[in-house]
Length: 468
Ligand code: GCO
Image (cartoon, rainbow, N blue to C red; front, side):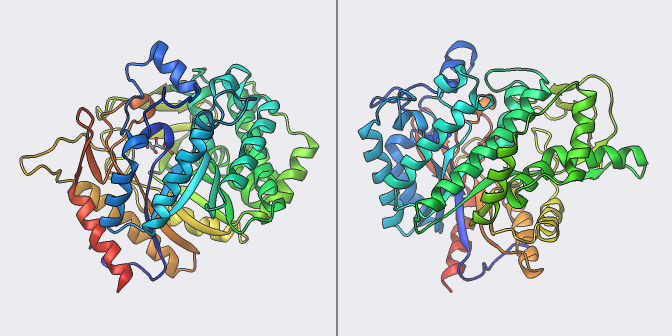
């Protein structure tokens, strides 16, 4: 069953992130972020030219319009705007982003803009990144600058997928500074980012601007792998660590006692600790009702089994099925199940998990603001065929099955108003480099030519259904 009609007023969009698409990392006075330095030293991949969006955005936005989209997710590169973290603004970057936003608006494509998408300035990393509270102050300064400078943006996101960032930096180690299972650092960075988000929300509210703001969380629904009480308990700890801590901090503005109890169990077996200042709690509490939007990224669910051995993250960066493993002491071990299909990167394909998570948010967080599914999509290894397109029927099925769950949740009363596919065009995927393709448009990274995939044509029909 393919979704044929979208509800009136629904946002149908595609997502991007500055570092994954822009390229041009050395142009027009841009400073260096943590990825520039890390990839120059250790990376197999260059972030240039990525999808060359810095130069080609007029073509990409025109394609987005032609293929039925009415929304786009973008992010601002902090180091483009402030090449030195405490230095003056780079005016050419201000002009660049004004032009980009204007192009979107001229086409009737609503831009949803994130301030931070995995791309901390190198200077910030060198001073502890989010572990150092001085960097929260810097982020607020940068955020306020953006709010005041770009009033054309009415939908803001503060920080994208803070848990993926902290996990990549301090658990798995695929992200700079490449620490392995330093649980104290991971959880402290997450808490500090929740505080940074909350302070940005309050700052936005205090400026009295006519728009909305929120956070984007990567949520992964957890299911116990068996009825064993040990697996059920492990799954509760997994859920507290991966989902509840984030949802509580953002949508309730307080960590519930059960969340903290489960989290303490995880911290304890890992000899880890978390520092929460009394003023942090006041900030979280004050910001919670001021969130106007909530972004949820959903790709997969996990089946969790009890695990107390050493932590292991065998990261599958090449897309070779069956090469990954994730075991996190005290949290649990992720199990593959024969009846659940997986992508080449070993991600479970489990659309029901999206519905279950939306219903759970509605049940447990009744004050949740308007929700957007800000990322969902399927990575494939792809090549152009003779007809100069890509038959990505598997991706269409994936998106269709997840879109169905979104519509089902709407019918069940969830206030979800849009779907953004990850991603608009093929792009640079962090530690995965360039072979993990997600786009509606195939990018030949040598020539930078764009080719609509079969999924783009399907999107065009979906977009047309909005006009009916
Ligand atoms: C990938 C990821 C994407 C993005 C995104 C996360 O593999 O490339 O699945 O989700 O990296 O930046 O917000």
